[in-house]
Amino acid sequence: MPESNSDQQNNDQENLDIFTKDFFDILFKGNETTDNTELKRQVNTLKQAAKDQELTTPIIALFSKLKSIRETQKLSPKAFGLERRELTTLALKHENIDEHDVSVGGRVEKALPIVQEAITRVDEYISAKTEQAPSGFELWDSILETQEKIKSYLNMNDDDWNSYSGQIKHCINSVEELSKVIDLPERVIKEVTRVTKDYRMRLTPYYASLIQTKSANDPILLQSVPTGEMIDNLGEEIPPVAADHSPARLIDQFYPRVVTIKATNMCAMYCTHCLRLAHIGKKDRIYTEQAYEEALDYIRGNDQIRDILITGGDSFVLPNKILKKILTALDEIDHVKMKRLGTRIPVTAPQRVDNELLDILAQSNDKKPVRVVTQINTAQEMTPLSGDAFKRISKNVFAVLNQAVLLKGINDTRVKMWKLCETIQENYVRPYYLFNCSYRNPQFTHFRVPIEKGQDIIESMYGNISGDAIPRYIATAGGKIPLHRSNVQGSSDGDIILKKPWNGEVVNYPDADKGIYENERFAFMKP
Ligand SMILES: *Cc1c(COP(=O)(O)O)cnc(C)c1O
Ligand code: SF4
Image (cartoon, rainbow, N blue to C red; front, side, top):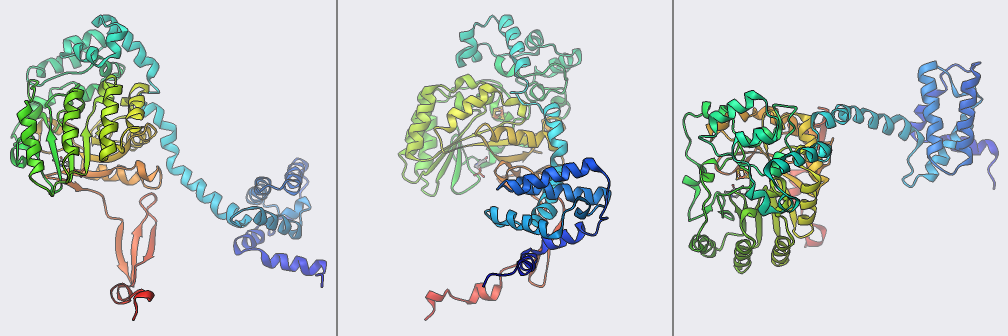
């Protein structure tokens, strides 16, 4: 039997979900008359669009307008000739169109305000990220200008600039040289000259071109040019890691199943915060065939070892021939299942990433997974050139991971760290670790950031940027120790009390029942 018109209307009213009913109750509590003809015209246009189109957007536009009119002018939909019946029909139309049956009340009263509130958490970042933490992409025009200056001063032609050998041949090793190609403030020159006698300085012309001379605290400058603090901080030396963690030649081992081979002591650029300062030493060394063989023998003889990190120095400094040899030898060891290559070269000398190297990576990756582990500390280090190098590497290996160091003045703010993590992720590099700058080398006490500050920065990322762009925060102290804060606040009555890192809201989360977990068997396992 066909329902009567008014039965249908009553049914419709009841079919509304609780969010929409509450929403309508509020709307219709407003005043029922107005002589604002302009507003009437606007509402009428929105109503017509909501009725005519088989789409959700115009319906939401109408209801959002009615909500805002109710809030700002205390007017009911009736002031525009809209009855509850007509709005109910539109609300049900919305629910019917929407694939997930989302109601008008749910969307307008709950979802949209929640999104609006969430947006306020990233407002500051979005408005500040280009100015406070420009990427190498954003600075590219200025970088190109500096490149031209450097090329002409160093007498480099395009072939020199675009080749790794050209970059290495023209490396900048002193502040005198650097000050010729970059406008360094007088203070910086004096400070640096004081220390380069004791500390090694080297940067590729390419890396030097990333320096933005307007700022004395340029993050590229701070990372590559030793400053007075490094001498002033000298005090009690803590013996280098290798002294107590090297069970065999070239090998460092903290863990049973992962070891590193320090395959070279060279880098295309020497970092002022380098953990391996002592190992990098004062001069380049070429390692002998026997050294690599002894390291490989140690791995061959210990069949619990599964993952090998080839590091340095910088593993990409090694000639292709040697890299290939080591990777091939590792691939031939049955118990070795994974390999990693530690390198900063894609950011310090991206010209190194040639097709021959990519082929070596691809061939080894075909046998057992290869990960390339890099170190990028600011978005400024990611340029069209390094981005391209990472893209090409990522096509040939299992993963490209970043290990950043938390450094004062370089990446110790929310905006700088978010920007770094987002920028590298957009360039095929996944944030992996963020290291607290080590206590071990007194030379870089001035770069250290309190643990708590790092925890705040990391915590601010949850819920606000992609989960797989959030690194794990780590202290290195004879192995890597996680530094994250616990978001478990306590427990009550079988619930765990959790804190949402992005807004501090506390939620109760029912834990699994221990009795069921320990005693119950699955139905198909019961006798
Ligand atoms: C970092 C490091 C590793 C690897 O640690 P993961 O947590 O697996 O990344 C292994 N050995 C040494 C000596 C290291 O410094
Ligand atoms: S690239 Fe790595 S090993 Fe080389 S100087 Fe920098 S931190 Fe040290």
